[in-house]
Length: 247
Image (cartoon, rainbow, N blue to C red; front, top):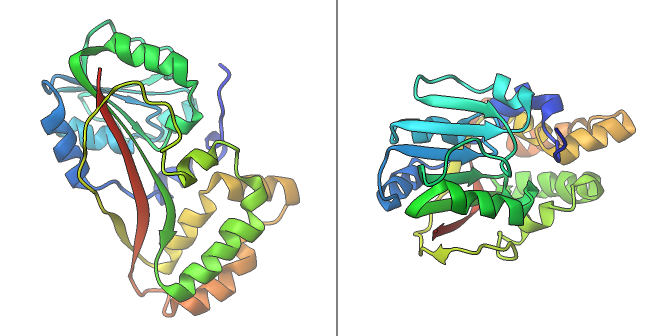
């Protein structure tokens, strides 16, 4: 199976290090769906969004083309994890109330995926795709993080990263738009958790593979100084962008 795979090689670390999505988002999405029988989480990765959907929908179909990501997903009795591309969903026609794509739409073949969404969604079913871009903690921490993000790993980001930096505004989205409220994406992390997140970046892993050096290690001492006591818990926030529409 051919797909743009930037995470299978560190799927375990990805599972441990990624921030969680706001609970308010899932409350709102469940309220928009015509029913709560079935949600399809496309490009589910380690199932982070799938778990939240499983508390609100009777069944969740969670698909990802990466076997390693699915292996690292947490099981639930009402989640059916499938190793399959988003462009080739095994769900029957007009079966899903909601389709979600968490931090993955930029990797898809958009024309083929949207055709599947329109096939799988029930009439007036909802599709929601979201991304989170650059994060911030404190000015001192951000200055060091920006060196990693731009100067060190900048050339190693896949070209699709531009869609995230552009807030998904330039992605095609052939659905009837639903106006969504603003959602805050924030976690409370120690220094170790923040460093783990930086190491989960696809560009960090590509830099490491190309140069044999962990780029996070190059700024770790400076970042630790900016953070202060390593056990200090700091708020880390991301720019959060949501596309939402009806079939």
